[in-house]
Each structure stands twice: as structure tokens, then as C-alpha cells.
Amino acid sequence: MATNQTTKNISERVDNVTARSEWIGVSEAMLLFPLGKTKLYELIQANLIKSCCLKKKGQRQGKRLISYSSVNDYFAKLAEEQMSETQIEGGQGV
Image 1 (cartoon, rainbow, N blue to C red):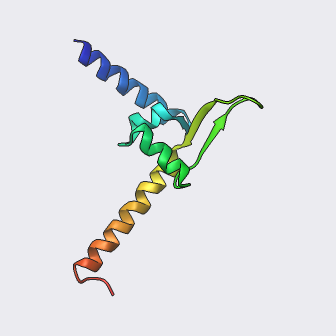
Image 2 (image 1 turned 120 degrees about the horizontal axis):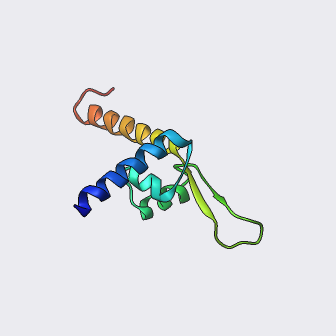
């Protein structure tokens, strides 16, 4: 029973996140995309996805937000690159 309730809670959270806004938290990004926390922060550090940190001046920590569309754009670009590589390796490239 607990597993079904957990799955339902996750599903509701995902539905709320996708309908909510362009900017999502790290935990929401982890629910929506096949990425873990470490990989998300690696992509942020490499400037491959957009993010910002909400915090007051002088605070050490804040709330990290990630641009939903930038993650989608990252995956689209990655897929295009891999498709191009496949075509070249298969002798279909120029």
C-alpha cells in the first residue's frame, strides 16, 4: 500500500510542477528528468542548463531553481548530436 501511495504522491507532484512554472527546484527536476542531483549540478556548473539561486544578500545558502526549458533544450541538443554521430558512423554523413 505504501508504494502505491508514494507513486500517487510523486505523480501528483509531477503534474503540479509541469503545470506550475518555467522555474523548478532541484527535487522537482529530479522527478521530471532522468537526472540525479549530482548530474544536475554538473550541468549547471558547465553552463549547459540555466539556474539561479534565490537568497538574501549575505546568506550562504538559498533555493536553487532550474529552468525547465533549458533542461529540455539540453536533451534536444544532445539527441541531435548523437543522431548526427550515428549518421556519420553509418556512412550517411558527408
